[in-house]
Image (cartoon, rainbow, N blue to C red):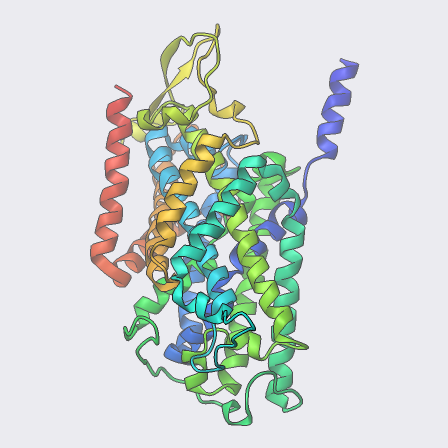
Length: 505
């Protein structure tokens, strides 16, 4: 008893609080490549008023979803797999598997987006900004960069990141504070530089002609310099939406929190409030002092106004993109391993680490299936017997990612980088996140509506009506952005659901 109590006390000492366990991880994942590389362009296209509306539309969906997540997180113990563990144990493995795979794909392709952002930041130059510099050997590094497609650099960087994660994801977690510090320094230099540029005390890398006040108040859509496509309001929403995701970072660490039912809602909602304020402030700062043409065609305009040097901001931007990609590549395989370990999806069993003993399997109905059966939904999954197991249970998945899951995720993320442009991958990411957030809200509404005995959240601000509003809001956003892509995403989620249900029979 004494040794056990000592062990428990040592465990309690290692638990994280709201600030370090939820707020900082959410902040680090929410602010990233879209803020640095696309927010100025969106401001130039939609205007400061339109961009503010875009931010509020996107943030409302994540805010309502955070309330549902807080309710789920306060409903029971959370172990390996994070959101998948919560949803599958609360709502059923069929629903959990479908939403979990969408979350996995969104996280994996998120790594692709961040890698492309790092490459774009490294190799972006203004057209005709300077001529190629030929060294004594007749070699021009700039000409090599221009002749080599960006996809090649992205694949090389993704390979490097996968190798780092395969060595051990604990090193990625340990370096999280460094990457967060890089993001903070970049944002500080950009905000201070923008204020000084507006006051006329600092020009940065811009000219006086590019300092124009109130030139971006209203929408003025122009063709993109790379794709040649003229955006619309809703296409800009799809590009910006990934900048509001990252609210699951605290939920992923629920098992490490001292008081998850308090830390998750406070930390997540605080991170949403801080990042939303930062986005709106930067939109009105940069949109009120820089001319329209510069915002649209200079993707790295924020580095041009950074104080005291654009190099500081550029290094910070690249570091933050690589750090975010590392976090995605460290988290996605762990989630995939947890899904595969439950044995609900047969084609993922090759990812589980085999053990020598033999497994005895039997079906076990979830506690909440009785409540869901009133809606025609059944939920069951395979669990091991008491004697032995041949594959890991989700609860026993190691913190270290299996190398097979890492390289499987690397293959998917590498395919994402072949798109070559952030603007092409963000709409896909947006659909995955909207479907997942909408599904979480819908499941919470249904469980509360049927008064399921296994769903008794301690989070007092949860309301089934707000959860229903969150589902409708996410679904409406997906249809307004692109109804064909939304229908394909819904079909994909339904096919995964049916596949898991049929495999369990």
